[in-house]
Image 1 (cartoon, rainbow over the protein chains, first blue to last red):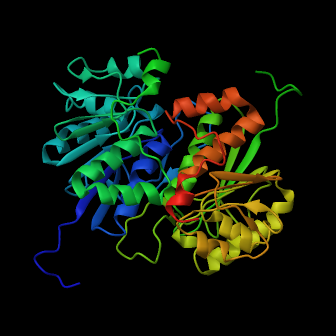
Image 2 (cartoon, one colour; image 1 turned 90 degrees about the vertical axis):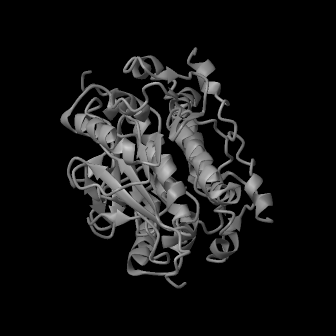
Image 3 (cartoon, rainbow over the protein chains, first blue to last red; image 1 turned 180 degrees about the horizontal axis):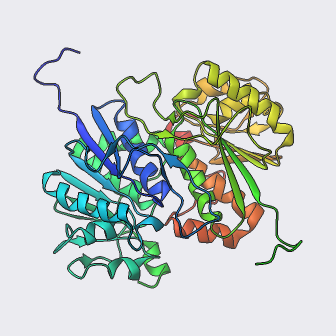
Length: 220
Length: 220
């Protein structure tokens, strides 16, 4: 393929990582993007406070197992992005230097983004960054009270697999991030591209963003 | 909690990693085990040929993005295991020193395992290791012909979300690994434990192992 003017610009994707991120919050969405990158131009930055591997293990569960993922950039060296993913997990709860850095990064980078996708309690970090102020958003249903209590200026939607408001896509808990990401891919790249990816991972999508049996399950 | 004789032995879990593993093949199942480990004793070994981070990126797609995960053990130093996961991905195709090492490891360790769970084309590695000889098993439906051609002594089941034969659980492609793992957790830890984990990740399980719209989609 020649380097013609028609060659589309790559999609520049970033993912925020912090200790205690939920593994599937990251790797459900990112594996959809991995497959997208086999046919479309994509760059990826895995962003944390340092370049040391980041564990999924939360300090709150000393005996739990974890996996460590290698960042490619720090919050200070992160490149310009089109799309930022903010995952959730036990690591979003409370405060720590890396969480405060992540919140500051989200606040500063948001005006330059084309899209923000939060997964699970990642919306709590976006809320604390102020970027959900005045917006509709959703989050993990089991952690609903705790997460929605973090910011009063968000119009939290209790019954939703995912919510889109402007350029912010917020998903419900964990696996809902896959549906939100496939919906985002459909919006930006078209239905056929999204269909190929969901078929490739043998995933039967929830295509209705209001489909949410977990809202009822958790009494919302 | 006292260290009484009644304390159950930990579940010793291992996962084989190789360049070009499919991210969701690992992190769908392992995130279920991560959550299990918050309430039950679990140890985890991430096993590859060296301790260098292992990328999801396949050499076959030079422009694709990838993420790197840090192993905890090599094939030579891996501890005794109860349960081994073998993921799939483009990295399983063809041959390479690490894939040959992985196949040899699977062949040697299988007699000591209590359970083997293969995800997606991971069943191709297990087949090449000979541990599926005479057994019923399934695999990724898009990669069906290529994967089932690897070993003639396997009774490949085309229409299955997952298949159990003896102590081997084999899943269909990628996201099917979540259903197989939750079914395995239900078998070993009970329905309530599996239910809590699937609700925790807001995942609506496929509980019927013969449910497989992708078999038809791919003409099987």
